[in-house]
Length: 93
View 1 (tube, rainbow, N blue to C red):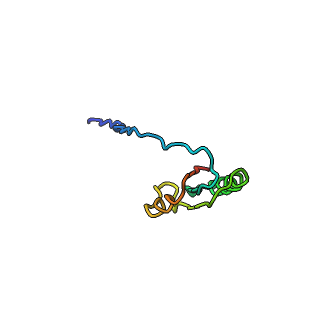
View 2 (cartoon, rainbow, N blue to C red):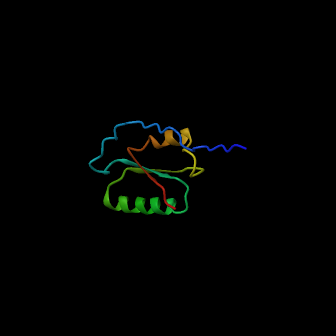
View 3 (cartoon, rainbow, N blue to C red):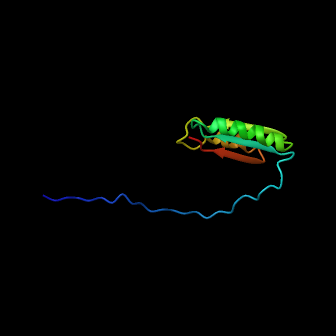
């Protein structure tokens, strides 16, 4: 009788990338809010919307909600978010 032992370790692939340049202000910009569809993400992002509109002269808000929190956003949704100058996403359980 032999025993097989499997190690559940894979190769980690790390990609380096530059961060997007930061904006100085949200005045006159379109804000994107991407909800990951977890319990409190909508609540968090809606309050952020209210708070940021009170502080800045935001031109418009693009709000989208992913169909499933465990999957990437569909490509068409990502394309819609490109209408925004700045995008915030939330993982809020």
